[in-house]
Image (cartoon, rainbow, N blue to C red; front, side):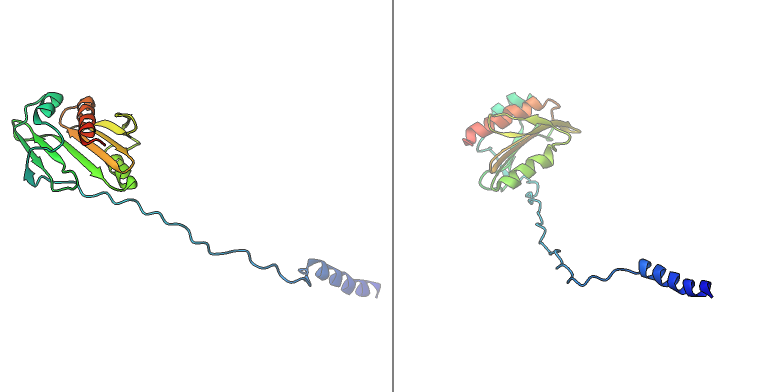
Length: 179
């Protein structure tokens, strides 16, 4: 009989020890809030310009481009971009030898334009003229030199593999435009 009396007591103690405890305190207020996560939209780079009119280039002399790029210039065309058009310089073969794109507007767009043509991950850093920053690299069809400063960007593409030719032209364009 002693065993039957102890067994219910042991079961009761065991069940009480395993049961979840019930607190008489009020539950803490939930501290989760739905904070708006800022969404950043990448700056929209204007589409690549296309030639729409004849030359001359308003900010670069044709002879300067010929000497800097090492090829005679047979034709110059400009885009309809404002305030400065993109200038397209063609070789005697009729193929594009050099283009100079000038962007003036939002700083984020200027930087995005430079990073689009001379990506930070693959290009070498460019810092000429003083105060301008960007990149340069060889491409399948030549080289690119692209720099930005505040809300302005200058992108030079050349059919020559030496990026120094693009740098020389970019510096002259910036100087002539007083940027």
